[in-house]
Amino acid sequence: MDARSLSPLASGPIHVHFVLLTGSLILDWAGPAEALRMANQRLREAGQPDAFALHFIGPQPDTRSSVGATISALAPLPERLSERSWVVLVGQPGATIAVDTQETQTLLHWLRGLRLREGALELITVCAGAVIAAHAGLLHGHRATTHHHHLDELRRAAPRCDVVENRVFVMDGAISSSAGVTTGVDLFLHRIASICGPALAAQVAQAMVVALRRGPNDPELSPFLSHRNHLHPALHRVQDAVGQQPQADWSVARMAEVACTSPRHLTRLFLTHGAIAPLQYLRRIRLDVAEAALRSGHNVTQAAQMAGFSSDTQLRRTWHQMGRQGTPSGAA
Image (tube, rainbow, N blue to C red):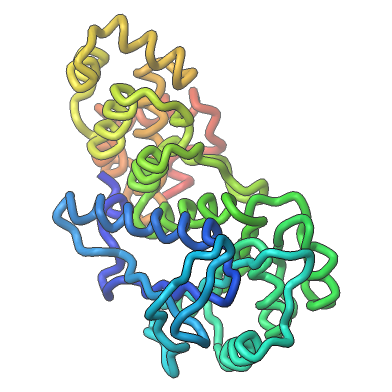
């Protein structure tokens, strides 16, 4: 399987700091935090260490959430952040974001001291969290999005930010922003896929019972994520198994054994719920694995073997049948 699919960063987990102010929208941070927790859980089940360390911080040790629940024992805003950290800013209720309160001013002062760098210290905003980042001057010269009710407010707060409308999420270097509420889950699933691999992200999405979406600016949806916007547990089991071991000697009959059904019924399940035939799904997964191997420096023979193709010729044939441009050798 792709090494990314179950291996977190060799240097240790990414420290994810959720910043909570008074009135912070619970769904903005609880959904993403649960996605990260589930990713860690899947890694542990596979005997791997956690990829993410979650922290909940704020200017005050206790705060009242958007629905009235009190969040206690928040850690203070850290003087120093770990080498690999994400700072997450979330929205608050109301037509505009009030930045004249003492706690928000304290947060803005702290944010202005951050030195963002892609792959090191990164900023993630959910909903109107982008407005807070704008008031801290962090969006200058960047592309970002926010909830549609706050787009004009974001433009006023950051005149030199390229504010993008009608996007699920936008990624620009060290800054990632999402449109609001549930789109935060979409963004974090995307980040989980980039760190832990798309197969694991698909498992997290399945556990959360959410549809996997992509931002309009993202590349074509990975085969690991497509054909999975369904709730059929047996079909998910097969897709998980194929994604984890694409090089195995798969046949429709062997897939049917994983699903505990007949080959004919499995084919019906794939066509009905996944809109693709089982062997065509397998070919797409294998081709994606082969492409990743070629991009990482492996030659065509090695890529074919790693992906489960019987020969270089079969990889080249599938490459052209799937409409890939050029040749596998050219992608190496």
